[in-house]
Length: 328
Ligand SMILES: Nc1ncnc2c1ncn2[C@@H]1O[C@H](COP(=O)(O)OP(=O)(O)OP(=O)(O)O)[C@@H](O)[C@H]1O
Image (cartoon, rainbow, N blue to C red; front, top):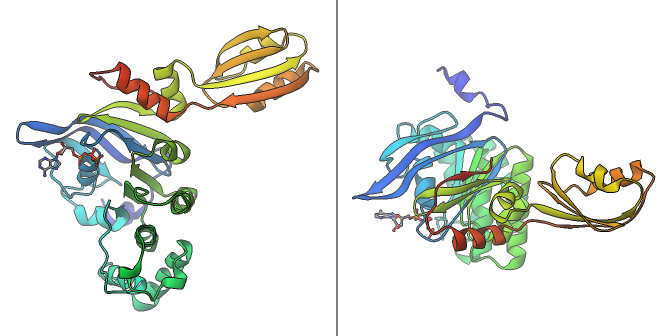
């Protein structure tokens, strides 16, 4: 493959990370045991699971930072074990404990990385300023990192990823130890990366946050991926219901109309003018249109969104041993 081909960005549907039978053993113990997954460009993908389930080991294999015992993984078309530098150039990594030089300022730390990347002085200065601006650290650019809070260090880590113009950002527990405001700001920044088409992979124990920002999640348990998919799909699989939409409306044949909406799996008639729909997505706009289509009067429309907390809790209550259940 020529360098020009390598530089070509893959289209949205092509996996940017592809793993098959990925395994890491320490001695006789497989801490990651034959996992398969594909992550596509622009996706925010969450790795969930109890402590020791294999999330960090999986991340380290993607980065070529730990050996693969068997199976395969490719990142942007490269094998991280054989070509770690090519992967490193295109992938930004924010580990659990970010390693910056405390005695250097924010700008000096980024300049150090920029030099390692081979960026010319002017380009380096421009990218550093833009990145610090983006993460809200421009006013403390000349302060030593020793004075930074954890939230500021995490934002500096993200600035480094932005400065690199990374195509993939891998974030290990990025919001752990952050206060609620710092967490909100950080999640907002992740949303901005997604909006720019950057693929984000993050591990976290904060299920509500993961639910808000991730397109899909993989639930790890003892080295296996036991569930994988979008929250609504997993909710249908594990809880037997996804979004529950309640409609209060009068009009002829509303229940039949509601049942015809794509993604609706069940419509219960609770009263002559009250209906409860179970659906794979939030179908409120379609429900409103269905009522209007029969010249009906819509009085109330509410939704109960599926919760990752409930899925997680139910899964670990009901599945002491796990085979893989793909919702995707
Ligand atoms: N260098 C090592 N030698 C032996 N065992 C290891 C090594 N590194 C990790 N492990 C084991 O691999 C298993 C998976 O660890 P890993 O850090 O991937 O889990 P995790 O899902 O990221 O957990 P956490 O949520 O606590 O970060 C654990 O049982 C851990 O003790």
